[in-house]
View 1 (cartoon, rainbow over the protein chains, first blue to last red):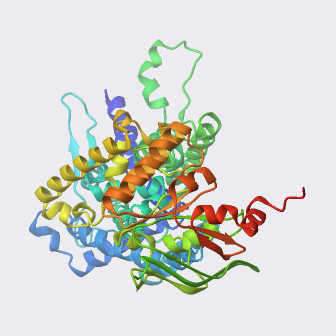
View 2: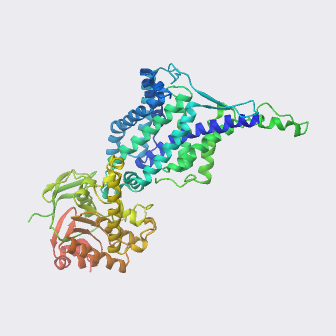
View 3: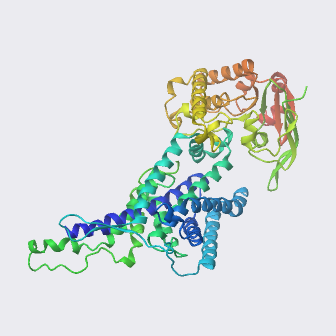
Length: 332
Length: 256
């Protein structure tokens, strides 16, 4: 039983955390791709920006959360999401809009977004320093240990993880309702389907683009803040998530939000399953195994330091077997 | 009488190639004006400039005497200047009915906040739009396929849907870009009938670019002939068809 709890803590919980973060990031990447038709490489750094804003706000009002009994960073999350989405719109106006007006090819936009990524990272480093900082300023992270009867090892979930699960579900359901039920959401889907026709139908495509950045920016801030609340804030925190997030978006079928969610969880669970030490689960069965078979201490598929190869492996496999992604992409 | 569309001294070049060269065109309100010309005469370019998909290098476009040269396409739409596409465009994932429901201008739901502030009003408007879309489908004879994803419609049905889009709003001028291309004879009759009815009953003005001379002859008066980026001739179809220069420019020099 202890071993199953261990499996639950290190695979189910950890996989859901990583999967949620990847999924929220991949939704943003996929929305931007479906509306603006380019791969937005600065997306991970927008996540960091959101976390950075949340950190600043938390440092400014360290006790704001005590009133409602939540971590201060969570109370500041709506504000950080709003500010990050405005920053995303601002970045679009300054960096991408002039290029769009020139009608440049998508690769130029991709390179521009790489520039934005470096710029954001540099700016954050300038103000936040290069070290790690906890988003729990003058407070401690709540850790829930759920004891099951007759088992020594408890299920361990942290407060930010629980909040992450809840907010991921809220964001996904909200986005789905928005895209399918509101006219603005439908106009967004229409533009991803056929921008020329959308304009000829009187849809203001600039408003749709602004809306896309607002949604993508606020989702990025949410993922970044919750991630650094659970781990710690670092200027390069989410930059290293860029590759798995893109893998998730592509695996799910670029342009398909549901695919992005599925891809996010697929990549997240694949990572945790790959680094999980399977010897732990097999050890209780030692008695049943033939005597000559000795279990090694570590039976993980790959070492933790090679975790990053897992998304690539999935990505290549999907591109070979289903080049359009698991779900057909391109149009929301 | 002021023309509803007044194109004044438009110039447009791509790189070193001048496509529209000091071209002026006037379209009378309530007319079905045809525009013909050999390939490369600049028809599509001029059309895109009027529709707002391309900006001219110089010159002005007036709608009802009001300059609209720098107005983006979606705002021209709200002024009643609509276009269809040479290659039928449709939201392929939406049904025929939903395609039409995308159209109406200034919908409450498209303003960002009214979705949440005034849901009742949005719902009433949506019901009204659905009723209107249903009427339009009846008018153009596509009721049978209303719940079919538009991507599955035939080429001719897509063209009918393009025409249907223009009926979802208070259109004044409709620009038809080779709407007959690739449409079979039966559906073509429907299309022409629908265009004439819209012109007669709802007062739509049409500008029709067309290669099909039959269709031009049945539908349009007057006809404008473009050649090398300027207007070569304008008049009733009989006059245009018998003009020696048109025959040469349009059908090529007859070597016989």
